Length: 412
Ligand code: ASP
Ligand code: MG
Image (cartoon, rainbow, N blue to C red):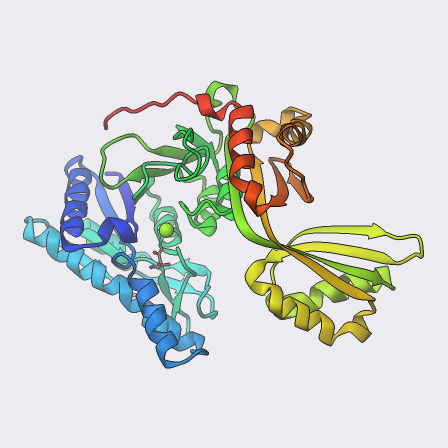
């Protein structure tokens, strides 16, 4: 008998009716003769609501108590789903993350799974039970409750699927697959039949909210096929696997974008050798995430350094740098906010030179100024003015033939 892991996100379990609908989807899989393990998120916006509750009490909640609080959201869903399955005559049992044997490192609010002890799960599966597991949570070796970071239920599902040697892991969500771009902004965005792990990892890290990046990493490490599908409509979703089928020989498979980016420039850094590391060490110590970095030598043998950060880190970045101006040894800093990052992603870039050139040509044709650039083997990102973000995404989507991806829908 094959084991199938199904994961249902917050919107898919947002009400009692939706939970009953999920129970039906679970039963369909069970009736196909499979063993089923279901992972669920907290109902609707429950987790946000819990965060809000804490903020009404304190602006500095301890991370341990936040994990204690947030882990309750998923427990509500698992019990209700197990009840819904039982009501329909199926033998089901719900387990919290720790009951399901999920052990994590001792880090609150963003823990990684270190081990899964599957004895209990296997026993329940052997007894023919449908197992419902709370996503997003685990326990440290010393018995502390932890959570896996926002969106972490995906990771729970993939990790369980890997350790149970499941045949597949299906991620059910409120969209019916992975799209060439965000359909809310790009009207010609199309659903993809398949995406490779590496492409999905880039897209997830570039803000495509459909999957938790760590879940994709896990799936890649264990070569576990993932499918993103709709919890409402019964249509084929998007398969995430090692080698995606080359959809009409697409070189670029997705256009991602995000706004609220600030470019900071540190002028006149005197000691380029130690200066570079001390600037970024100082920022890292204050948990300021730096993305694109550009270094340039000036005539006076000084270095200017530009880097991009999220807009919400700006205030802190300025004060941290100003406070350490003497030791860091620079003359002054400037910043420009209101920027956005537009990226094209596709494994086909590895074997096709000139993709970045074409991207810049298209942006230039539409009078879109590029302020910073970064690349990987399968990605090119350009920082542009925020008001040009949607336009840039749209023209790139068209230029790289994504408007014409064949829309395929089959019922399953
Ligand atoms: N409930 C958690 C969150 O909202 C985990 C998840 O949904 O994956 O982030
Ligand atoms: Mg999610």
